[in-house]
Length: 110
Image (cartoon, rainbow, N blue to C red; front, side, top):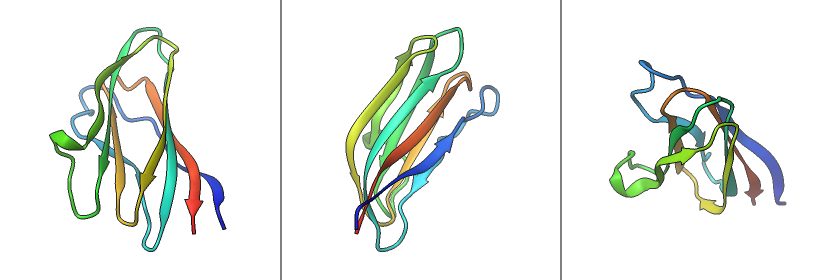
């Protein structure tokens, strides 16, 4: 059965603690999903964000980014949908100032 759900929600820290990409969602064993990612800038200034899709067994590398230092307007929202992920895959995120939240929603595929 295909089940809609929220897979992960995160508001990464700002400087000086925003050095690393942080996991938003790890896909469980024997699981596949169709994912939509939302980014919401809750601040009054523009913010840069990153999103990386990482295959099972890999790490964040230059080629895993689907958004890299993309700018988000104050109080702005960004979304990307239709992302297929498989068992062991992961979604990592980062924001430049710590004022944006990330949400991964979608359908858990059986």
